[in-house]
Figure 1: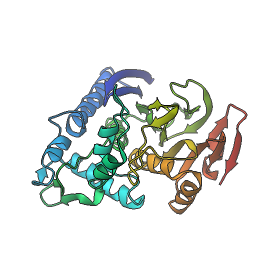
Figure 2: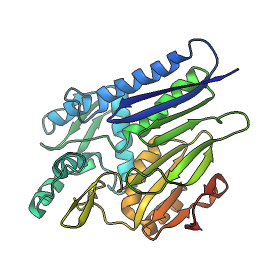
Figure 3: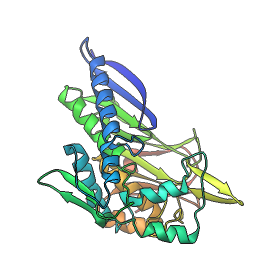
Length: 319
């Protein structure tokens, strides 16, 4: 007989929830192992930890290569791949821009056009140099910085699911600040149900749901983190090409994929693209997604129709 065990932690500056169905008396050890792995990742990958491997790379920008762990090397290499795929709309070197705007801080700032132009000159993922033989990374220009906030949660969710599998878990869900991945079914007769929320700050209104197994669900939108200045809203999703919060006709986009790292990396650039470019990108790359537009339309890929339940009267389009 399996039983449900749960844990809630605060890691990566966000709430992390685990739910696992297990057999055996030392089942809580699985959650402890997963939590410890996530804390180790946080120490390696966090932009906000002065002693992280990421900040060691940043401190040595334009100076030298820095030897890193295999995980850090892999996630940076993957980041370069996803940057190539999205023509630089996903770019981990956007960190200086994020820092300058400070939208996640208590003192957000609207930089001058001159300041934006100055910072954009050092935002370019092609300046990330990697040495596969020595597992080393270097930023080619001084003052460049990388921040893995747009991809780390996906990478880690995949690793936690791998851990569950190695410990003979067949049913589980991990939620890292809204980045969700499920293993197997919830039980023999029931899939995992993941809610799609109305894209508003702190929204608790579920407008639909997905019934899934062995998949990841990652959502990007500009509604959770933003500030208002002179009646204008500035959200946290910056376009690396312009240096400003992106102008888009989407409220949110949800990527459904086997690998959470892919959903994490693609969700933000597709949000930046807007619905028409995002639809083209999704079709060309055979992705699965749900978009909610500024006109309150729900646009969903045909493969998700049978998995999706609608709880509101919004117009639904498929492609």
